[in-house]
Image 1 (cartoon, rainbow, N blue to C red):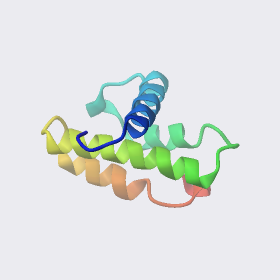
Image 2 (cartoon, rainbow, N blue to C red):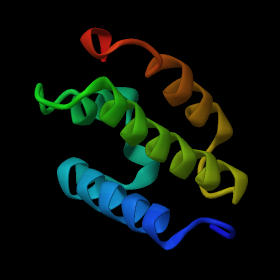
Image 3 (cartoon, helix red, strand yellow):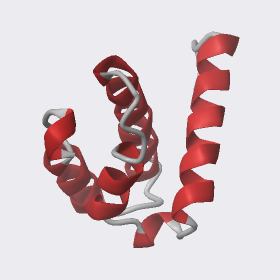
Image 4 (cartoon, helix red, strand yellow):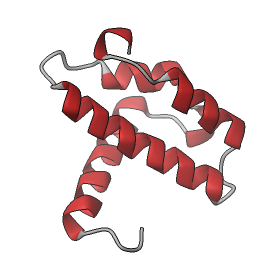
Length: 89
């Protein structure tokens, strides 16, 4: 997480903590459906907020794959399957 501002790191920590609290699964057990359900939990969120949250989750799963803590195929599935508008999340 080198080069990220303290505010960005705080945003990542908050979002990943909320995701972990909601999903309550090991990273390798998280499904695309878990991500979709998490992102669609609040109808009051703006698309920009959902996009930011999705970006944080994608970055985290990418990091897991890069550091060989999670299968890269799963990351590709999560990345491509979660693309789309709020109504399709």
